[in-house]
Image (cartoon, rainbow, N blue to C red; front, side, top):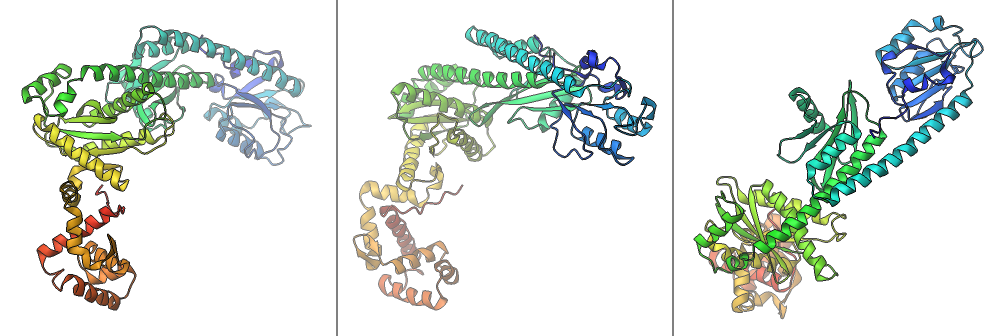
Length: 555
């Protein structure tokens, strides 16, 4: 079964309808495939064809001398397969084959466009020809459907038995009788069967510029090529390619290519869940590390069990929080496996190693940096954004909900991971307080680190009341105009003109408000550095207590 039985121009020339027909130009295109048969009599074909049709005409619509050339040029531009013309004075100006203009023949020859004519004394009944050809096309499509079912049945048998990706690729190569290539991340491309390095480079360059979200196909000279991304969620795992230098690829091959790409993605998900489950049970020691109960040497020994040559340059904790699925724990565990598996692939691309643990229904990612010079924060941020994009995609367990990453400081010493875990919990606390941002590093908390510390000791409210009591009315509610002015001054570094613009008030109005604030807070509330710092901290604390979304992520 090769799926190569698509109707070609050579095939129809063997039919009784064509026994008196003659190919007068475009002989190099007789191997082209025919998808449908259509009659056209208008010179301007507009959008009447889709491509790969056999067009029949009597030329009755050709009124001007150049109309045949215009007609054929448009057919070539629409990727039509071939043209049949019925000769005869009552139809067109061509009585004999010799009357076909040389420039029309040259146009067809230069584009490998078969030009077939029926002599005047042997008229072809187009209605019978169309009926027979359409019957052949429909029967072949039905045969292809049966072959596709057989292909999938055999593919499922491969998937049910011990196998790897190469088994699927080899099966695709044998069954379709086409060349297969597989581009997977940074790995060397796999070709079945092997081809010359020159052809490998040509295929690689073509695949790089082709769109791969849907099945993409192109014809370059004698090379016919099609490719499709192997996707899991919105993550491109690899690119599956089929190509041939002996025949064009048809709809059947493209359909099989799409099915195989989906099967390879399912294969990835299956192996991902299995691998993560195995790694999770191997990493039970992570809980001890996370809570600071292991020495440096013990940690290093454990890490080298999974990566013998690992050279860590730092470690950090990233907490992953998301809405819990309204399903039994089995599904929740599967969700952890999927997220950690997808996270592993993105983090490894950024030269991080990953271990993970579930602590109080929170997924704890332990990220180990393996690069010396490259900025870890930029690389980690890039990987986490990619993970979030996969999680947010509608195809990922149909959750369509936000995911939050709360990251602690990165520490050079492995036995300081517990400190990074505390940092990550502080980041998570702020995220839950404000409901944003989706990605927060402890390094970016700044003044909020002081606020959290003050809250833990019970001094936050005292600080707010001590410094802002004069502008507060009741409890922690402030006079709106004065509070807005104080906030605008803080955010513009006490630039009165910029603060006025931010508040949409006149310069005179802000000077009046400033006078009022000086009366309440003291004339030195701007000029005394230490007092100003405490006032600003108290102002952030007030916003925190009122749960106002004032936190802005630096990223």
